[in-house]
Amino acid sequence: MDNSEENMIELHGDEEIIEVIDLNETEQGPDDLADDLEDVDFEDPGIGDEDNEGWETEDEMEAEAEQDDSELTFSKHTGPVFCVSLDPVTNSLAVTGGQDDKAYVWRVSDGEVLFECTGHKDSVTYAVFSHDSSLVASGDMSGVIKVWKVETKEEIWSFEVGDLEWLEWHPCAPVLLAGTDDGNMWMWKIPGGDCKTFQSPACQATRGKVLPDGKRAVVGYEDGTVRLWDLKQGNTIHVFKGHDGHRAAMTCLACNKDGSLVLTGSVDGTAKLINTATGKVVGTFPAEGGKPKGSKDEEEINFVESVGFCDILPLIAVAHLDGTLAIYDLSTQALRHKCQHEAGIVHLRWEESSAVVSTCSLDGALRLWDARSGNMVSEYHGHTAEILDFTLNREGSIAITASGDNQAKVFCLQRPDR
Image (cartoon, rainbow, N blue to C red):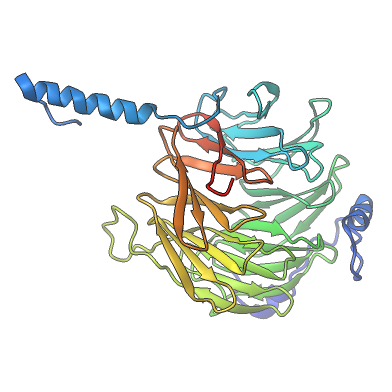
């Protein structure tokens, strides 16, 4: 890979491809942007009393495993469920994808399947609704991407890229973006399929997100580099690498409500705060926990697994592989709370209108934490394997989880203030 900063900054998309996005330089609302984009082993208990004690212990274990706090279980998948998304308009439909090479769109209220997303050749790792809930995109590990119209339950577009690393809809237009293991970011207008590519050195584009203004996208790469792309011009606005970038692969990223700040997490154990206007790294947050549980390698680093911004308070959250959830004050960058889990954290999500942050972990539990006090306010069980993904509705009253036990579950969330 060419590490020349000049080369990285001057990278452009494939100029041979017709540009279909026309994003103005002036401030625009969602409708304007949408219009623009239109153009573009138990121990042996023995005998006697010990035998009875052994059976009691087994019964207790079984009872614990049977605890299920969920309101509904979706069990159509025949393999681990890797992803889940909730339709953003009504919050009444969910889509899940799994190792069985299938995705299902189903009703949250009763689990009834509306339709199945068929035709995938590998595990479906991404399944997401468009901004207006009219479309669903499903993508598998082999790079097959399909788009379905919810109203008619029909496939309206498909494409095949290299191994898929991430998949996301534009926040206010029928435009789909994806990152692949060859380092490219792709952008398509749906259903027409007009395409634009954003090329970078041969290094996996591990994570990506379109910023709220709809004009820019931030992408993290396997070498720790972070690039801020102009979606109209197809070039990089800022490149973060070397001392500013991460020392290892990007694992996660998030942006605040107005897109002025981006938070990134990495295999190197740190999270970084980036100002998207100035192109400066304005904060670095080191690993707050120890080595991952069960780690035998003294050099093994406590990966950052998930990051996120609170919408109503100047707080951020960083989740680590060892089960540490660190809450920081954004203005002072001081550690406010450490919320410890018994198992590694997979994902975190902030509620839209509160200071509650939810986590899912490898022990199969969903937990809610009050970021103001650092206390756990509730926890929910029901899965018999790790939770691999989850999502929340707008009110923070419902969570839908996807698990390695081949199930998705709907939980009604209760808190003291409700």
